[in-house]
Length: 349
Image 1 (tube, one colour):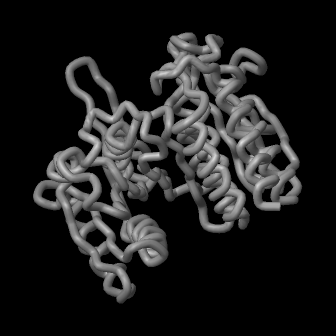
Image 2: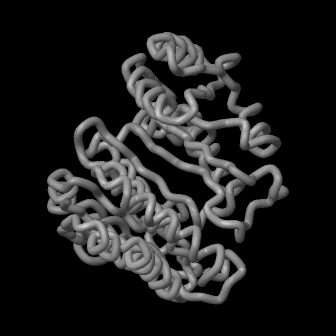
């Protein structure tokens, strides 16, 4: 498999290096080949080339089987003509990555969830967020006294993301919740109609609808009641961060942004965290679990499950970074997870 690696900014290079070490251990254990192609992207690329998303990086991403991304942006580049974060939207658009998968699971008993244990025990849901439409990609204007942002969705954009979510629900419990604001927004009225039509073609899927404000309340009140959630870009952005906090903290949260037939983008959700960059204290679990999602997508599910098990075992009983109450460094946690993969191979043989 050919992977284009975009370490990016802040803690991005640190957690990416950690994740690649675990990927190498998985490659050795499960006997699959990996070819890495590292390219500049984001603020670091502005510093190196003057361009946050060089043509060569774009072509390398398009020619890869998957893209592993660290993090993008930071206050250092706030004065840039276009903030590096905007080029993350451009990357998603260039690859056609319209489906963002954000699992929310309790990977370890050592979490920073603000909820009581009984509310998050067994929590295992996935948010399927439409990623390249809606208000983030609509026309906008900022004036002295007024501004506007336009939210537009077509039935095609809604249909394909709900189809993707139905496929995921069929492989899980069959329960799918569609989130909108159909009591107010025209785009949400269309969303609800199309979602209902699509789900009707999937007899194994039971569809329910929730308004986004009540969904935010329910994710805190009873998160275990949900399995697969599908929603539009802005709502998904907000709800997936809420779900990450509920499930144990953003340092543990992976993501996958998928296209139809092209390379996906796999990244932790925690951002560049410039305040701890270089300290060696960043939690690498989100990046490592993103590698597990990558391997799932590229046909290595056994390797993906082994990585998830190693992460859980180490965070439960071994090294943990300060965000989880430990004192271990980024590299120490990653090394223990890679070692756990090798140890499980020795046990199995």
